[in-house]
Amino acid sequence: MTTIKLHNTKTRKKEDFAPIDPDNVRMYVCGPTVYDRAHLGNARPVVVFDVLYRLLRHVYGADHVTYVRNFTDVDDKINARAAESGRKISEITAETTQWFLDDMAALGALEPDEMPRATQYIPQMVAMIETLIDKGYAYEAEGHVLFAVDSWREGYGKLSGRSVDDMIAGARVEVAPYKRNPMDFVLWKPSSDDLPGWDSPWGRGRPGWHSECSAMSYELLGESFDIHGGGNDLMFPHHENEIAQSCCAHPEGGFANFWLHNEMLQVEGKKMSKSLGNFFTVRDLLDQGVPGEVIRFVFLSTHYRKPMDWTAEKRDQAKQALRNYFLQAFVLAPSNGAAEEECPEIIAALADDLNTSMALSLLEKHDDSGNVAALRFGLKVLGLKPSGNWFKPTSLEFEKDGFLLSLQYYDTLPQNVRNQIVRVLGAYAHARRNKNYPEADRLRIAAQSVGLDLRAVKGRDAHAEAHLDFDPAKLEALE
Image 1 (tube, one colour):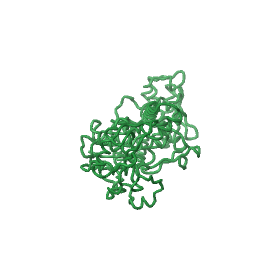
Image 2 (image 1 turned 60 degrees about the vertical axis):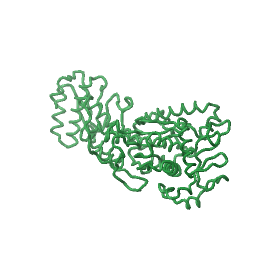
Image 3 (image 1 turned 30 degrees about the vertical axis):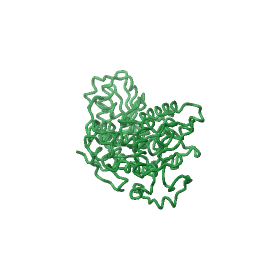
Image 4 (image 1 turned 120 degrees about the vertical axis):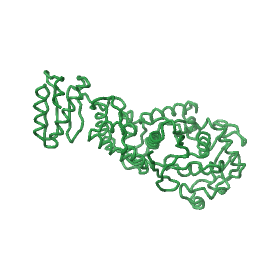
């Protein structure tokens, strides 16, 4: 079985991944707060952990992996959006949740096995908070319930590498008068009549942001599970607080064994910001005609633990690369029904802490060598699937062996004839590339005999044009 190595934020080193139960590999990833369209940065962790999900399913079996990603559908941002729009909160969250699912599907992301919504798990959150109070880790104050960081100093801050004293000294948050310690965080807060609220032992209120992930992961994955993921902007305080409340409520478990964090995204070398005019959503790009698989390819070209820079140049390069791969894998291959052939090199790259950039370089290698079976496998395991026919020009044009190949009247010919012409054209281009001019001349003269013109321009362009007397039945004799 393939050994997967992952960089564990908790230990700050790359480790061999060994699941608690190989028959049920469990992963939790923090999902979106659903009040608007997902911007490009929101999509990066979705793609990163989708690749990991695909790898885990490949190694352990699709029926032996449980992937949970939540929706935060109770939040002050949602409340504010409802107040300014006059719409019901339930309408906003239902709409934006579906937007998110549609946009992420356009990027080739598989849906997780479980997609819990915070509002579905309020009783479990209340029960967890009661447990924390009973054990002396939390306290009630003025209708709020807060986690007492001083009660768990031995563990708080280890994930992010911070000490409680340093965090207090550097705290820039306004300290509420009911807090015993500036770092204490809210587990439950009161709700006014115009805000969403649920009955609890502490009055009508709603959970703090951190409560939901601990309660839902416990209910769906247990007190110990294998992997917890998210963007590195969540490492502190969200993930730190999750660990504190989960380990204190369920000391019999270890919460998550592996923590994975992806780096942030920039646009043209700058932080994405509305004030800079470089802020856009996934839907903005899709509506501009950028295929979802092109967006995904750009994401995969940078290792998940490195900052990613979205640029127009990378977008264009990704589109050209995918056009070549899709043409090779799904158009030019002798049979579109040919099965993929597992490529150990690509799996090894992904198993090395999700080295997607290496995996993409292997796609290029297999494209260049004409290993269509491995190319198809690599595209599949990376989640790169063509959406529509954008990569199929009316007059076929693609890069191979340094030549720009074009084929007129492509759409008017049967598929088997297209494949035969392209193989002859590719052989002609390859011969010229390698200065095997006798072979190139042989192919050119032979092609003329069946009504097919092959020619090169300035040593680069190879071109085929079918004459009116073109006889496809004679093509096989040319190979």
